[in-house]
Image 1 (cartoon, rainbow, N blue to C red):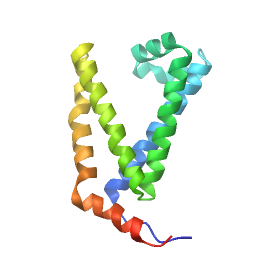
Image 2 (spheres, rainbow, N blue to C red):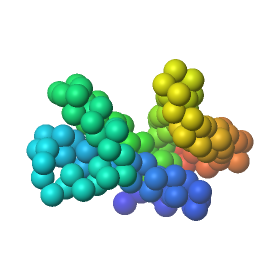
Image 3 (cartoon, rainbow, N blue to C red):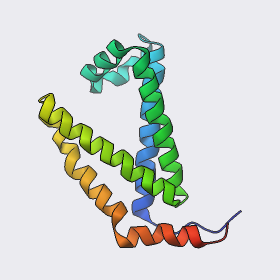
Length: 143
């Protein structure tokens, strides 16, 4: 059964956030594979994003599938308190941060800037010595 995982409400919430991302990106794959289905209602939140992904065709499906797998792996790694999960979470948040900055600067979509301070705070949380210690403690415990 293994050793109990160190408790952390913050890390559990972050794992749930990435699990939600896996579900949302997985749903987008389904809606891109079968456009016009009743599931397309989820795109009311971001019709411009939906249109762009439809224009990208098969590449969009591969991209969203990769995002789904990466989010699921990150959620699993954070939940299990594995160092690779923490590293993957930092990398994914950094990519999101850079894409938000790019979208604001190059595409003029200033709404994406709302994600910048959130990503910075989450990365800072994952880099904090106290959070890092949770992962180091979990890695040192026998399985």
